[in-house]
Length: 300
Ligand SMILES: C[S@@+](CC[C@H](N)C(=O)[O-])C[C@H]1O[C@@H](n2cnc3c(N)ncnc32)[C@H](O)[C@@H]1O
Image 1: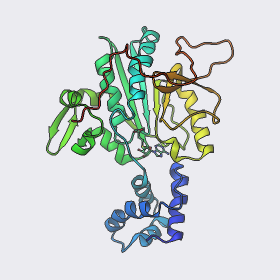
Image 2: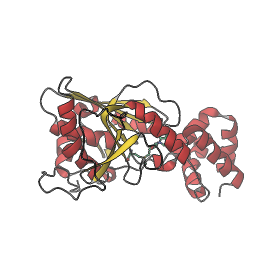
Image 3: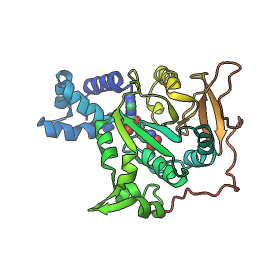
């Protein structure tokens, strides 16, 4: 088992480099993630490997990459995707009639299922003549490489990819499934560390920042939400994970119900209203039966 001092060193540098909090109790995870790197570096065990990390910044980058939690799936939690097609997209289509283009950011995109899920919905829902780009970013270079490759194992496909979309958007390549070149062309990738100043990447109509704030402490969450405020268009939307919220963290966001999900919109100065708006509600509505449901989880 990794020694307490090695574990402390790893937790400290992970916090410094990615803001991820690695609490005592996670020793088994750190050991399991670092052991293959120790073997590749030709050292006897994880403690010797951590000694190497103390002096080798390149190896620390590899270790940080290996320690990220990349849990994800297609159309994860369904409700946010349903909200996107049923509630957010109609408003964005009305608001962006002039430029007929949507800019979307999947921040902390992991291996890309979130970005490609949105790409499929847009491919199916955008009127002719409209274009879009999805900027997929993560702190992990390995994950970004996976987004660019667009290849997924059968086990990954079984996690939420409906059979009709598997047939429509994927080709079998050996033991994997490869997403179509048309969808891959709509996705750009960039390494962005949410804990560091954000590069000047423009304004987005829809930002997904899902299932990553949970790894940060309160101050880092607050700081990220404040900085994202400047990246979401005044009439755009921010979607967090189902257990994440801006409540008690940053009151420059308005939290609104969109179908069965919550979305966040930049609060406007008094007297200024964004061009479009969802109905503010105290809780997300029960599923609407009047909307045709295009989201299914029929296994592949
Ligand atoms: C649990 S996954 C969430 C993936 C996807 N958003 C979803 O909801 O399915 C969390 C992702 O956050 C990334 N991450 C962790 N710390 C980060 C940071 N400081 N900056 C950017 N991404 C980070 C990890 O590499 C990982 O891919």
